[in-house]
Length: 294
Image (cartoon, rainbow, N blue to C red; front, side, top):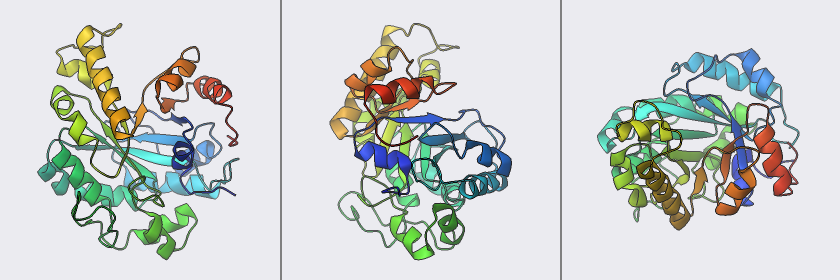
C-alpha cells in the first residue's frame, strides 16, 4: 500500500527526484488515454491546458480511465495528475476573476495545478487561496487569507482519489504548507516581470515546485525562438530562479538527458521529464537507488 495518495509528493517528501510525462501543448483526453497511462513509467502526468483545449469533459473521462485501470505498481490508485492552466498569474485580480477554472479542474480529481506566468506574490497568494477550502487554516492570518474553494466538487473528486468525501476534504490542501495535504501547486517563472519578483513570489506558502520556462523567458528577452545554447541573460535568469528555489526549499523542475540527469540531481534539481521512452527516469532512478516501484 502507498503511504500517500499523491505519488509525486510522497517521493519529494523523501527527497527523491520525480519524473513526469505529458505535453505542454495539450493532448487528446479520453477514457482510453487514461487507461493507456494508468501504468505509465512516470510519477506524474502533465496535462497541458495552457495551449491545449480547456476540456473538462475529456479530463473527467481521462481521470476515470486512470482510476479504473489502477493501481500503479507502487500501490497508488493513479499516477499524480497536474494540470497546466490557461489563466496567467499576472495579478491577483486576474486570478480571482478566473478562479472558476481552478474549481473546475480540481473537481475532476487532479492532484495538482501549474500556474503559468506567475508574476507577483499577490497573484500567487490569490492562486493558493483559490485552491483551498475555507476551513483549512494553516498559514491563514500570517501569510494567507481564507481559502475560497467551494463545496460540491469533492463529490466527483473523492472517488478518483479512492477516499470518502470527508477524507478528500481533509486531504485536498496544498503540500508542504499542510504536511498531510495531497495537492501539489506549482509555478512557471517565465518572463522578465516574473523574474523581478521571483524571490518573494515562490515564498508564498503552499507552493511545492517551480520551473523557469525557457521558451517564454526567451521571448520575453526578445528572441523569436529559444536560443541554443542559451545566451548569458537566459542562463542568469535560470540560475536566479534555481537559487530562489533552493533558498525557499521549493522543488525545481528542469529538463535533462540520461547523460546529465545525475549531475542535475546532485545540483538539486528534483523534477524532470521522464524522457520519450522513460530513459531519463531510468537513469535517474538508478543513480538514486530508488526503492519505490515504478
